[in-house]
Amino acid sequence: MMELEGDFPELLKDEFMAIFSVACLNLSKMYYSSGRFLDAMHYAQKSVEYADQGIYANAANKSEGIMILAKSSEKLKGSLIES
Image (cartoon, rainbow, N blue to C red):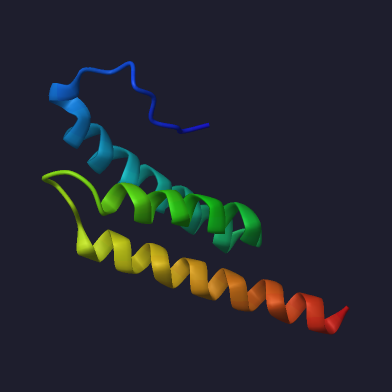
């Protein structure tokens, strides 16, 4: 869905990284709240990757993405134990 390609201007790369980081973080929150933990983990990981790059690197987004990864992992682990 949201993948960075090499076809955008280098001049805008930092802006794309910042925008994609926020977008992926919001998608991960939405999927987490609806119980779609694998999707939440996928987009949280993307958010962490994007938040760590460029001049707009954002430690808060990175931390929040890592938190969603951990919480989703625990939910999935719990559902496997209950099965």
